[in-house]
Amino acid sequence: MGVAVMWPRRNRHRENAERNARLDMVRNQLERRGIMDERVLQAMREVPRHVFAPAKRRHEAYGDHPIPIGEMQTISQPYMVAVMIEHLRLRGGERVLEIGTGSGYQAAVLSRLAAEVYTVECFPSLAADARLVLQRLGCPSVRVMDADGCQGLADQAPYNGIIVAAAAAFIPPPLRAQLADGGRLVMPVGGPEGQRLVIVTRQAGTFIEEKAVTCRFVPLLGADVQ
Image 1 (spheres, rainbow, N blue to C red):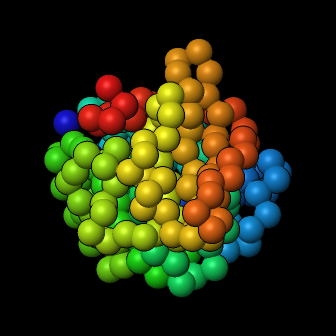
Image 2 (spheres, rainbow, N blue to C red):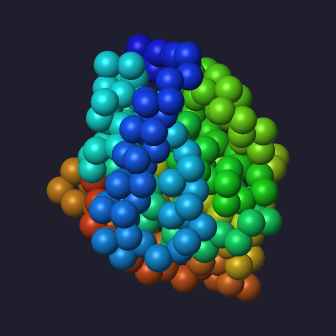
């Protein structure tokens, strides 16, 4: 079951409450935990996270936790969205590939930080819902594709940044191959027993890896990781 897209009439009191919730989220969940990239912080102050949440969970939109959206998928915890995007080190002119569109929330944040965002979702119902919300919100630089995320999106490669919103035991080779020289890939790696964010930087044909925070993501689905 996908996200019910509801766009109620403008209500000044509600809008103020939602804006204050976003500001509190950024201040208490992101800044206090060390997120320092002001562009990332500002994007997350601006993007209305609640419009990406299922109607019955909209009141949880700014909570410090993931939100189920159907198909056993989630909107990632705000802090984890910020950490992963910050590691991409975006400056504004990049082409970014996101694997795991989910609700579309992370793609909306990315759209304020990069020139082009391609996002891949393997569940057609989620892709359709995300596409509708992103169009209504006004994110023309985002293109939502129905595909196997493990294969990436070769026809638009290379990418300056690749972000994977699901975990696997290893990084699928096609994603490494589609990373531009100087580009960065961020992905949770590991199994149910434990995961860490891995940041891969491609430099002159070699791949340099570093590990960041521990995390917990849903499994990456696709032919290369089964």
